[in-house]
Length: 257
Image 1 (cartoon, rainbow, N blue to C red):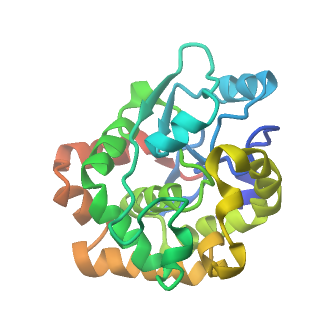
Image 2 (cartoon, helix red, strand yellow):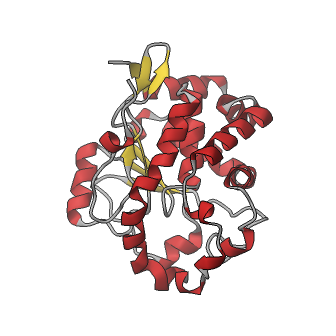
């Protein structure tokens, strides 16, 4: 049985879009192991109580996909004791001059195509991300960007595809970010000055770019299948060995309950 995003949601005061990927069915009588890999939005606003929650969850590694500018402009990320940050600052695609400042300029670009461009621009970082995720001594791994939607959504989709999660479940997990959008917007309002949100004319931005429409993730998965054959084919293309891909599955899948 598929676990809903609501049941996998981790309630935090300083982040809105953190959830465990555990519990999603992966075929062959297996499911994604709970408490090993989580996805989320920016963690820079976490309270001491939030840090205690992540410590109880067992977070040992935070994979920060935010740009160097985002990290520099926002507060340092509080961490559970002994946890480590691995920063893989994804580059914006050539079609997007800046992650934030250029968003109005690419309102014509469907999200699925934008995600393909993100993958192309960050193949080396993707390899690092998946090598961190596959290592059991790193678990639990929490990977995040700013909103926990695009860069995080790309990573989650590829990971779940490799683990054998059905496309419909991958799409549903991605679309569930919309459930947390209002709360995220409240939190993000406090970052407006640091990230120059006040310079954006939101009336000119395609609202799909700020949302998580299911059809765009379905289209992205189709792009991955067309270009690389599958998520596994993509990992092979960026240099992960068959042994590493097998370890990813062995370390993140358990018998379904």
